[in-house]
Image 1 (cartoon, one colour):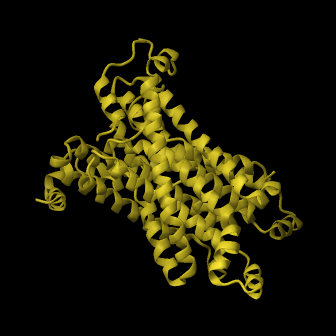
Image 2 (image 1 turned 135 degrees about the vertical axis):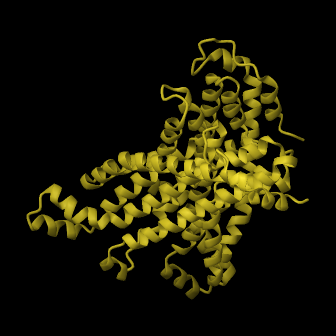
Image 3 (image 1 turned 180 degrees about the horizontal axis):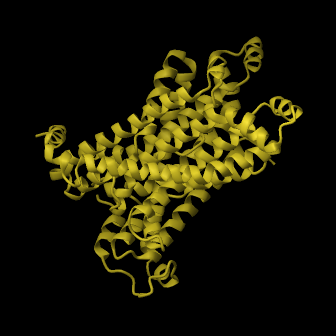
Length: 241
Length: 237
């Protein structure tokens, strides 16, 4: 029997879906760990990036953080955090994943505020807006497309990277793949393939849904002018390692 | 021929002799120099082969996408979809067919990811060549081929080199994921250290070596770029 048939057979077994460590439970676990990591990343990166963009300082630091984050293997952080005071369990995984969410969130928040037309900013100041009002009423609304773009890139990356939690027995859909490898490719090949398909499907679904949300978030007035964040802001960032 | 590092890590099982399990220990480094170097060599080998293969495929592909407008959509779309799929899933797709005895699975996966970065950066760089420069070249009688070799590629070279640097650094980090398919270089030591009683010095030493390797290769490529593109030197400084 071929591996593909094995994979289909594995997916067709209802127990593989409803087991305590079946597909449904693993997907739920995968999604909540990812959501927590993205939320944590936003809580840190957005205020920082918005503030740096508002005062117009720290651009080189953002680039350095992005470049350095590319050199650090995800697997290393996933193994290191459980051994620190954080201890084993989801918090360590969430912390490690959120660190990889920070660069795209930070870079896009900073870029979004820096890209606000200086004339618009001047006009706001001329109308007597204070720095805080300028941020709330002018800069932030104009930066929404960038923030949304950063959010999508970060979320997709975290959902993809959360697969690697399986290396430290940390849960998520990756566990299905790693268990399959654990059985050996003759016995577990079908499960490995099925797990790979599930993970790929989940990531593409998250990417697709967030792309729609991103489109919906773009203010109507901006949609006409084709005001899109430059592709380079996202492209310059690391992939779903 | 299975990975020697993989076998060595599996054969150990024994944690270190230091009961305090410190984050860093010189005695670990001095006692395991051979294994560390072997893992580093494997890591370097996987990275270099993957990036070289990726470059050899990606640059012609990007030129094709640049020249034939109708192909750029499908090529970019395909790379975008692949980019979204996690490496572990990609290895899972490949391993049942390519096996885990040879580094084929890991190399194909790594090459594909590096490919995407290089294709995108090369295409962006080629598209950024100013239209008036192309116009004047045409006016001076440059043919398509001469234009590619003497105008477009040299002007796109800084962008291409940036793509190569990003691809190389990301590949070094990504090699660790190959552990699951039997070929993870330093990743074997990181995950092996975790599995044999959470042996901290091994995890930390391998991680530091991994980051150092990424930064060292980045610097090498930066230097190469300076040498082959002397005209960018003044601007960069």
